[in-house]
Image 1 (tube, one colour):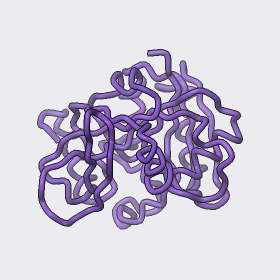
Image 2 (cartoon, rainbow, N blue to C red):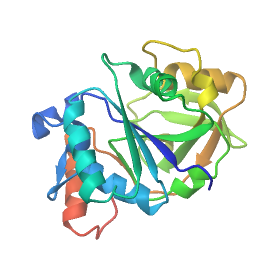
Image 3 (cartoon, rainbow, N blue to C red):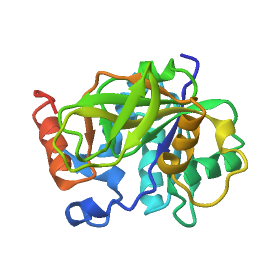
Length: 237
């Protein structure tokens, strides 16, 4: 597990959750007295991550204040942290390309979302081949769209079908090579531009993770995570 660097996509507007958390950015959504970001940082640190790069836009200052506080007094005191702030939204791919350029990043890194909880799978991603996507099987994939795999290679993505059917879904954690972002500028999507290119050249691997997965981006799932934490993590998400 040589890779200890994690890029965190935390610049989104969180519009679907804004009616509940008001002026807070989504990663700081309050849960039992602590922001959601605290819980996922705690999990990442437990799994050996020591360097965190936060990609920010919406209400970036609030997230920076929280992280700096944890750096000085809390769970990040033994970790390295840095921030890249987008002047305008750049999309998931554009944000990473911008960070690679600004921080002169080389080699590979793990990328994840600041609004997604995984109970496990981090070690698998740290040990995975470069250019991999973490996936898991869910009973109802209608919110996410599905992934088709052959011999652990991703061959296609299917759009959301609004059908309550089981399927493999992207859980929002990736092991990526910095080289695939070199020379790219502006706003673009990781999912719609980078991944299809990698599929076309048969260069993207599916890493199956057996994990509890929740995206707090909608009120229903945010409340479900709150209930889970408040119950002492006593039931499955």
